[in-house]
Image (cartoon, rainbow, N blue to C red; front, top):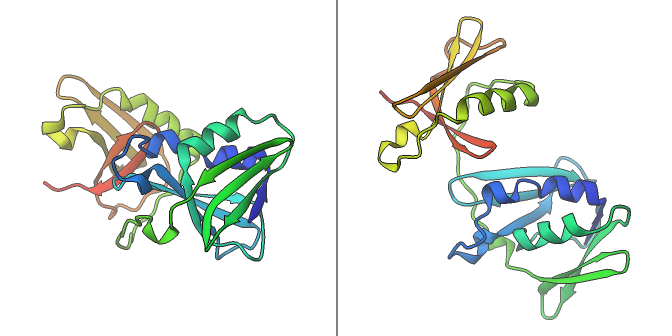
Length: 215
């Protein structure tokens, strides 16, 4: 179905633990969906979701003409890929008995068989249009989130404190977090649109989901 370098696969699966719930009572939420990238013939898309967060990662791959979208257990696949030795190319081959019933992962002399669930069962989050956008260097954003995340509240009853308040300021964007006892603020210098609405980013390890701020 497709071949990819170990580094590309490992990079695509690196966010597994941040999004996928390994003990979810809904089996499909434990899986990662692989599908073609309509914008590039030499890339695939790996999609993860827990119904609160959806993450999409594009990675380079040699895609066979008979490729069809499928899902496999994300945690198991991530563990296998990370433990493989560097060097051998990873190939995922289809196992077909009256349809796609599983996949076989080959790398060097290693062989692993993984079960699949239908791609059509994978949940896709519907989102509206975002009229505003902000582009920041990944390292600066990661550093800013790390500086304020410690003050995010974990108290479920005050859900509005469970994220990071993000809003435009005169010379950049300001990130603020508080749990009611301590407060942390960080400003990233960048060009912003003054009309951009204030949002609260619901934090999950190194991921955030932005939600409109309602007063």
